[in-house]
Amino acid sequence: MSGQTVLSLTAGGLVLGAGVCAWAAVSPSSDLFGRAVHRAGSPRSIALTFDDGPNPAITPTLLDLLDRYRARATFFMIGRHARSQPALVREVAARGHAIGNHTDTHPNLIWLLPARIEEELARCQDAVAAATNVAPRWMRPPYGFRGPQLSRVLRRGGWAGMVLWTRAMFDWKPQPPDRMIRRMARVRGGEMLLMHDGDPVIERSDRAHVLRALEHWLPRWADAGFEFPTIDDSARPPLPAEAN
Ligand SMILES: [Zn+2]
Image (tube, rainbow, N blue to C red; front, side, top):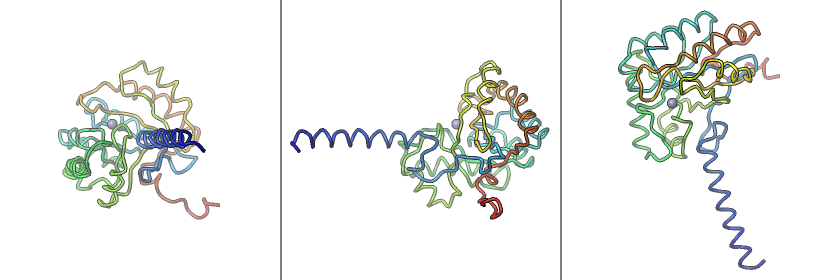
């Protein structure tokens, strides 16, 4: 093997290595940077998750809609929104939904030092716990972006883990509801859906398309026999009878 071949193979390895790391940092299905829950846990379930709230313009109506179909969901809240809407945070918990930590200000965690990540998580924990007396056990990194330091922070902090998704609904900008309704036709049992009831910056963001799309699909999914678990139910190991 010539020196030149070795050099180009090494360069190829480096490029491949960098590609794998980039994929692991942003892919919702990668476990390379720490184990994560991605799915609903049962093919008879669809796990609904809502990020970037609470949002006083939408979240109360969303809670009523979920109640109508006995659906439970997980709300990954932003600390600074939770701090300004403590009554709404309490209401989400009182209706039986799970609340997860989505950091305090929604930064990209890939480049943050562990101490800064801990601070972001702690401020969000404080905001939720001040409203509900319960601190979240699960977190979702903003944009799903994470580096190897995040799983070390979560292990050290005794977290249950991080939560990603199987399918993003691309709902973070206002849009005609029909577009989201069509996208949701691809959802299958066992999936965990990434949706948004809020916005990282705007406190009262327009998420009417999310409500309209769920008004369309929740009754259809309920009729088909699907259940809607929180993250705690999704992450629960299957009963022995179900494992066979
Ligand atoms: Zn987010």
